[in-house]
Length: 424
Ligand code: HAM
Image (cartoon, rainbow, N blue to C red; front, side, top):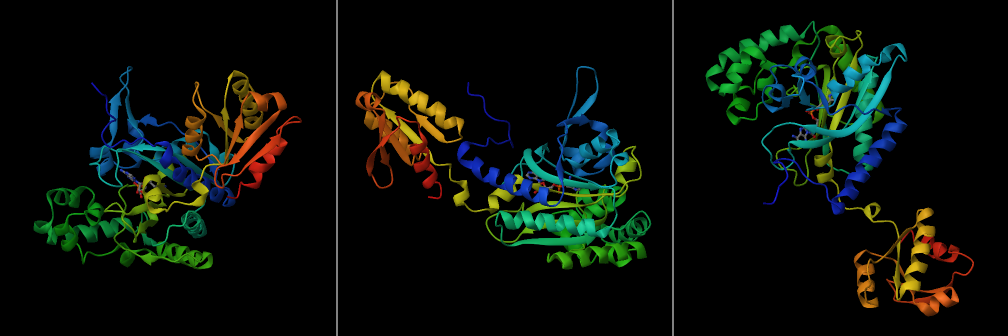
């Protein structure tokens, strides 16, 4: 019986990986320009970490985690997101004693047992960043500019930044109470989940996708209306920073996010063009000033975001940059020619020139077919005569033109031809 992949989990095959590589390279370049450094944390963490950070009453922790007991009876969870593990690592490494501000990024798989559909998977990859140590609104704005820069670098038109502020420990309880009163008034129009959430986690009702709930909460009070003075000033600072960075945005008071750790700024980058389906949020994040302390660390503020790589890749077009590096293919006839080609491949590959030959004994015609399928720019044809005279017959696959190249004093001539065509 054939064994199939796990539902909601995908293979990335070679044809598709070039775009992923382009996205990751653009992100890495941009992170470097903005002073962010890479961290890698484990995929498996203590279940407790996510319960205390993402939140016990969130959909993620209530219904979506992959949780299991290990052989020592400890409850472990495959990370559903990156922030919690990064915060744990920040605390565990005592990083706040090393530097006042830490700007970190990460790339890796996350796991959520959601109902799979286009753009929503059970294993998906995120590129994310977290900045610890400052509550300056400029750092929020700078991060949003960083996201905008990555989107521009991979050419994704029509992605809109939607911005909100969720307030702080001072004004959030007031908002919660105001919202709960409003929800009590429309309780009979809410879905079962939202009726329950009205008591446990009322902000989550604003994120419900049920059309009845969207309608019932359309005139719900917004956080922005009840922000305290400090939050209002912070939010104005973020908007000023965005103006300074030339990043446009729209205010969206319904962005409450699906994780409980947020305070102040929250945001989502939403694709408004193209065939992205219902899962059109490419990137989400915000500030979490109480999270480091809540997980046992110092009172250090933080802000971060994460892109879904699958969703970002689905938005970008093919690009010349995805083309493979120029390839030279050695087509050989006879054992001596094959050995000659093997030595040439070893020399060329050592200098990062892509060079290939076929495996096993094949006809010249079959080898040329293979060279074509691999997209070779040149084929070096070698038989006994060529080996004897230390030359190759170099065929340009695009023009069909064939010239003899002397390789008696090395392969520089071949290398030069390939480098010449590198821009093709
Ligand atoms: P999130 O909004 O849960 O935030 O996820 C961030 C992004 O990951 C989403 O905007 C989406 O592009 C992608 N994503 C989420 N779930 C799936 C899925 N099932 N399939 C495919 N893509 C998905 C976080 O995870 C926060 N940790 C972001 C953050 C960092 N906040 C502060 N720092």
